[in-house]
Each structure stands twice: as structure tokens, then as C-alpha cells.
Picture 1 (tube, helix red, strand yellow):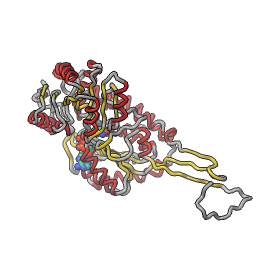
Picture 2 (cartoon, protein in one colour):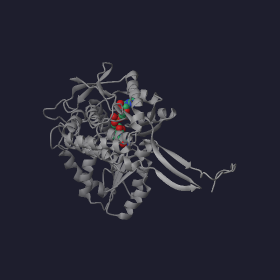
Picture 3 (tube, protein in one colour):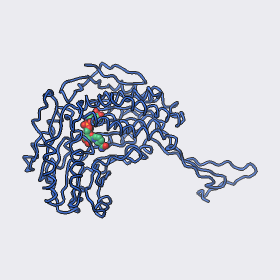
Picture 4 (cartoon, protein in one colour):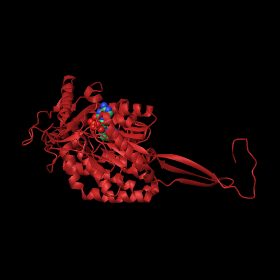
Amino acid sequence: MSLIQHLINGELVTDNGRSADVFNPSTGQVIHQVPLASRETMQVAIDSAKAAFPAWRNTPPAKRAQVMFRFKQLLEQNEARISQLISEEHGKTLEDAAGELKRGIENVEYACSAPEILKGEYSRNVGPNIDAWSDFQPLGVVAGITPFNFPAMVPLWMYPLAIVCGNCFILKPSERDPSSTLLIAQLLLEAGLPKGVLSVVHGDKGAVDALIEAPEVKALSFVGSTPIAEYIYSEATKRGKRVQALGGAKNHAVLMPDADLDNAVSALMGAAYGSCGERCMAISVAVCVGDQVADALIAKLVPQIKALKIGAGTSCGLDMGPLVSAQARDKVSGYIEDGVSSGAKLVVDGRGLSVAGNEDGFFLGGCLFDRVTPQMRIYKEEIFGPVLCVVRVNSLEDAMQLINDHEYGNGTCIFTRDGEAARLFCDEIEVGMVGVNVPLPVPVAYHSFGGWKRSLFGDLHAYGPDGVRFYTRRKAITQRWPQRASHEASQFAFPSL
Ligand code: NAD
């Protein structure tokens, strides 16, 4: 068992203060200890970022981008090693881990276009001899706090873009699976990033509070559960920081009577049970328009759920690994109990699953509930496990009302062959990311990612064009060079043409 280190000011730093266990969820064994930084340790990282900022902000964007080109290559060369680390600590399958890394690399590719995305705007002759332009300037020291469920991809949503925009970044990754996150940051230093521009400081609430309270930290990006997102948003904005805090979700898929059911079923299987349901874009509710659709859907889903290949994430060819922790498994099992006692029909019960050779792993099989109603806790709350709830409604309008009434608004999708229904859905649904026959509509890196309602606190979405806006401040400059021969009288009225 080893003690994981912080990466501060370009050096791996051992911290003998408080620490937490890191588990391999497939075996149930503790495999590492992760330090939980004190305020003093966090301050060292903040100071190093502050010291690195003046030189980094003056480094030409094209040079910053060159570091990202090398970083992308290193990430690709290290894909197997990174996927192994993700899978060992998170539990997701190797293929799924490689998939999240690829989606993360897309954000590095976007960051490679720094000279293009940081081009300002220029207007000549806005008045006599007056030119005007606007720039995107960096904020200074900015920080990110990330969840366990995408230890590679979510940090890559944040710091490549923040850094090419000229900022220095402090990352506080999830304490549950920090090793892949740390390795990826080390690769960025290997790619040529100057020390202090990116630091990785492990920790829990104490480390996060140190970031919230530090006046040097100008902006915070957060991804995680809604209660923590709301806490960070309110505490950090109170202190004048810019904040984007992405929270939890309850993502509905609407199945229309004309949907291609076989395709919808295979899409739903991956979207509900992939990564053991531990995705913020996982589909956790199937809204069936009409009993016929619901009955046909359930008949097709049941054998496939029972046939899910479940085992240690690091084995090949599996559909699903374990949940991240014993607490996560027990919490999801508690929801299943609650669903049964509140009257939902448990069609497939994944509890009690034992995986041969990994009997102590945090496994739970796929679960399916039918006849779920909006009053039930299993409908209202985010379960974050391999549980799909079927809700029956009579019309598309009822389906949309249901979704619009839910407190979360991260992702949703509709399965249909009807263009008119799909268009109405896209126009009227109160959700930030919408798929039409696409179950996980996670935007590509050059569009931005974000939910509505209590799935996001803040105004700007993550990565893409919104990410550039978030990590820069706009400055508008108006410049005049008077002609030598002319003298202009004072003007007391408000300047206009
Ligand atoms: P979490 O909220 O428990 O933790 C997220 C981060 O916050 C971690 O770094 C953690 O150390 C820190 N943290 C935890 N408790 C804290 C506290 N009291 N004060 C300050 N910081 C604290 O989330 P998680 O369990 O790691 O991740 C799962 C959640 O993240 C789910 O709700 C999921 O929907 C959400 N998520 C959302 C998105 C999105 O884009 N909207 C993406 C991924 C995950």
C-alpha cells in the first residue's frame, strides 16, 4: 500500500497529515492512502500558482498550445496505463475508462486552438481617429474540484482550457480515485508546462474550504453532487469569486409509440447500466408513452439486464464493474428497499450478486422498477447506481410535464421517428442537454456542457466556448492617436458620433 503524493510547484510532495483509504472496489481492499491537505499545504500550492502567473500569462498563446499538443500525444501513448488506474480505483471497465479518457483528450485538442479562441475583436474608426478592440485576459489563479465518477475526463474539462487561456490552476480531485488524475497532471508537466502552473492537491472539505476562502483564487469550477455544488456556489460567490458548479441529475428517456424499440433498448442498456449507472448523464428513468410501449420495453429489457456481464473492472469484455464503495452499494440497496416499500414493482433485483473470485467487491446487479410514480423517492432523488425506473404516461405532453417538473435538468432524450414530436421536445423541454435517438447527449468539446435547474449553479457551462468565457475576463480598449496638427476642444456632453 502506498501513500499518494500531492503535485505542488512541479514536485511530488509527501504529506504525512490526515489521510483517507483508497479502495479497489472490485476486491473491496484498501490499495492506497491519499493525503487530505491542510490549509497550509493548500496555501503553498496557491502561492506557487500566484508566483507562476506573471510569466505564464505573458507566454504567447501559441506556445501554451504547443504544450497541449505534446500533452495530447503523451495521453494517447499512456492510454492503457491511465485506463488501468481508473479501473482499479473507480471500478469501471477498462473499455469504459479508455472511453472517458478519449472524451477528455477532445478537450485537450480544443485547447490546442488557443491562438484562435483567444483572438479578440477589432473595430477601426469607431470615432474620428479612434479604434477599439476587446481582449480575453486570464483571471489569475483558478481552481477545480472534481468528482469520483470521471477521474480523467472531468479534470480535463477544466484545466487544459484554463491553462491555455493563461491562468494557473489548482486541482482538488476526488479523494476516492486520485491516481489517474495525478498521473495525467504529471504528463502535462512532462509535456513542458512550467512548474506552478498546475498543482494537484488532494483533500476533502478542508481543502475545498481553503480554496473558497483564499482571496488569490479568482474562480472555481466544481463538478459533483447538488448539495456540495450549491454550498460551493453560495460560499464562493459571496466572496466575489466566479463559479460554475455542476451538480446531480435524474435523466429521463422518453419512448414514443413509434420508436425503433430494439435500437432504443440497446441504447438504454448502455445508458442506464454502463459504468454501473454512476454517470451524471446516465438514463435513470424510462418514460413510456402508453402501456403497450412500457410492456414491450420491459419484455425486451429483462433478459438483457439478467445477462449483464459483471465483474472486476480490470477484466476484459465486461458490461459493468462494481460500485465505487461499500457505502455507495448500501445507499443504492437502500433505494431499492424504499422503492419496493413505496409500491413500485421490482421487476429485476440485482441485490445479493456475488462475483466468483471477488466476493468482497462492491457489486450490485442491474435493477429494473416498473410502475414508478413521481411521488416516490426512487423517482425524485438521484440514485447513482444500476437502477432504471419505468414511469408510464399517456402522452408526449404528460412526459414533458413530468420532466419539466423535476428539480434536475441535466440530460434527457427522446426515442421517436416523428420529427414534429422531436422538434417540440427540443424546443420545450427544460433540460440543458437533449438527445434525439441519442441516449447520452454529452456535447463534444467544441460545444459546452451543462444542465439546467438544480443541475448547474452559475451562468456559464463547462468547456468549449463557455469555458473560454469562464476562464477569461473581457477587456474593451478604446484608443485614439490625435493628429498632430489638430487641437480638439473639451467636450462636456457624453461622447457620441
Ligand atoms: P461529491 O459531491 O461527493 O464530491 C465532489 C467533490 O466535492 C469531491 O472532490 C469531494 O472531495 C468534494 N466534497 C465532498 N464533500 C464536500 C464538502 N462537504 N465540502 C466541500 N467539498 C466536498 O460527488 P461525487 O460522489 O464524487 O460524484 C458524484 C456526483 O457528481 C453525482 O451527484 C453526479 O451526478 C455528479 N456529477 C455531475 C456531473 C455534471 O456534469 N453535472 C458530472 C459528473 C458527476
